[in-house]
Length: 281
Image (cartoon, rainbow, N blue to C red; front, side):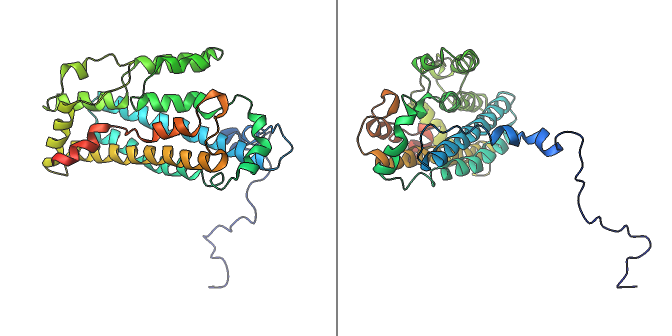
């Protein structure tokens, strides 16, 4: 009996269901046929394909991360800290995958990059609307960054909405205030369409959080935010190194200052008081 199927056990099918009316359920859900036909290279260089696909993958990760940070901001607004922390922790794994996207491009020599760079024209990563939404959620607001998107009504409308909404960090600081920490009115009621600037009193509030029980919701929230901030910093530095290796100090595409602009960005900390408060604990 051990070598034969028992009467009450159904025999395993030899093959999965293969015959569908129309497209497969997988295709209907993932839209793989759309995704895998979005690659239209503009040069004859075989290396352009990996550059294009890697950039498209980055855009997909931007989209997921924006979703996570918006979920976290909504949860914080509702005082649901566990849901916010869960979304931030998911975004940490997603940021790790995003940062790994630099690996296929990290070894580009100037000659290899130059072989298809002209195909980019004035295209540059800073023109990414979804990346700009990420930056806005981090508190890096700038109305001028909407200008490149005036010709794309949906992207422009989404960015304008994000510009005038509180950032993720704004919602964090409002939560701190509701939990009894001293956050100045100038921070709580600031013009959220402007770039966030560090505050000594916010630094003191974080120092108080970190001087207490490390297992409180606020302390765990602070660490989740620090994980996010660290990976954003790594993203910026990996971008800088890959660009420096591929093109040196030449001006970037799209009229940017290239490496000089990236160096300036890499020096900035996200959620600044979370870093400086550690000196006072």
